Image (cartoon, rainbow, N blue to C red; front, side):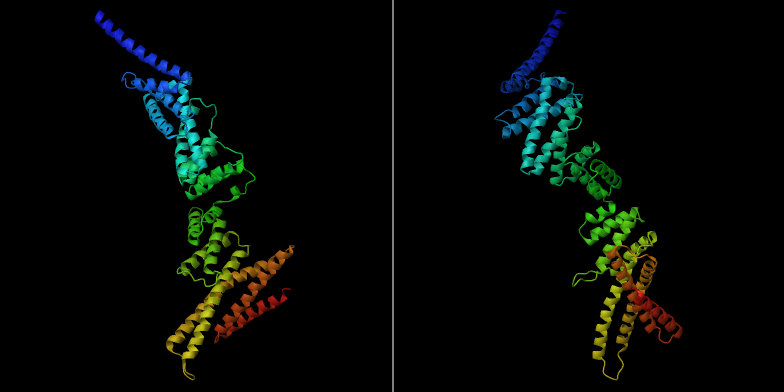
Length: 449
């Protein structure tokens, strides 16, 4: 019995010695004797019984992180090494004691506090030097430590705004958009506001749209408007972003098609899709070449404009786009007709018939020209009906513009019916009908003053 008692006494004595060693090293920290504390700690860490307790690792975290922040060490390669070892020790401590109960001790609190301060300080230096990747990695770790300090109420704030915004900005600048969004979301969900924070909501609106996450797009657009009511940015809708975020025609077209895939009756999306296709098919740039998929694009444009017309049939602009497109098409075909007529005349001997091939192509071009004009007829008739029933605008500039568009539509209708009359040769009834239409529009044109 005495032997067992002796063994128990030895074990208890060793335990008390280890406990005393923790306290002795902590006492050195009280007087900022970090170098002595490190010497004693390093020696104690060779003892398996000392390192069997989680306290050994939070103590190492505190000693090493504190030394890394000392004047003369801070910002040096030695500080980086000390910090790395402190982080390893802290991770081991969390593994051994997930509840982190020892962080109630004011001395041990200094461990994660100094780690946080070190990462924040070093990260900010890299941020100032525009070393985005290095800076982000440090702010990311500072955020993790900040969360622990807040959770343990060591930091009294509920949100570490500064470190979150810096983590987000540096992530964004080194093209880690998903990481940036994670930090921006935390800030936005806490409704941060004030100078400089509008960019938080702007990023999330743009990012969400790019990810095709429309619920989040709408959420952060609404939050942005709530926090920054004077900003016009949050008045833009998904159609504006579909067009505004892209730079090429095909990218804009695809973005609008994606909007319409889930919202096929979206007036604005259909309108803009029709307009950008119109601009591509009717380019004003000198030497512009018709796209190879002209027929496909024209069909998509017409379908989009017809959607717009179904929603708002009282507005003239869509009809004008359609009419102008077919007139432009007719002009291009007529240029081709005239060039071919000259070629055909030059190679046909006087008093002889043109070749069968030439006559076939001539008839094909005439048919193509008439079809283009016919495509413009109905849209321009709709335009004429709208202007005929609309009271004259009190706005002088608006009234002048309406008059110009009205007369333009009528002048083309005159040309369209004149062409139909010419093509109706041998059909007296049709000639009479088209002659009457041509006169009707001519008389109306002359009556508009």
